[in-house]
Amino acid sequence: MADLKQLAEQLVNLTVKEVKELADILKDEYGIEPAAAAVAVAGPAAGGDGAAAAEEKTSFDVILKEAGGQKLAVVKLVKDLAGLGLKEAKDLVDAAPKELKAGVSKDEAEALKKQLEEAGAVVEVK
Image (cartoon, rainbow, N blue to C red; front, side):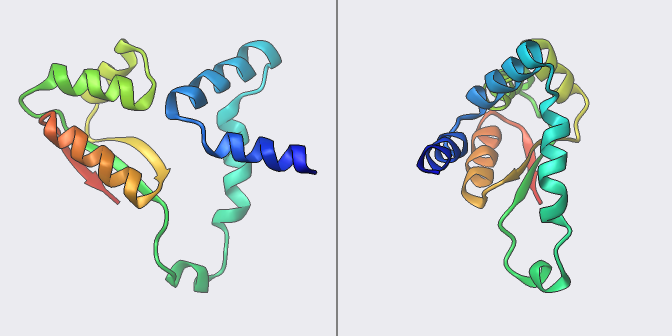
């Protein structure tokens, strides 16, 4: 049981880049699609009762509204923040408004928003 708790703690503390690498390993070596697993895990938790919805919001989505005047800087930053390849990051920026990250803490959402706005992007946190 202690080993499982330690593993859970390690998973919770992964960076975005490490999560991306883990997802790639799970997909390539074991044939597990991480997105499907995330939906299965998030599904029951999201279906709580109305009282839970009335509590303070703890999960936020970061939405890239537009790239602004410094598109190249924004693409590079999105690449690093989301752990994407250059083409995927450019496609995401070109498709704005687009969700950059979902289900992050308020602090992480605000930090992402600040970094993106400093690069010239227009960002919304929901």
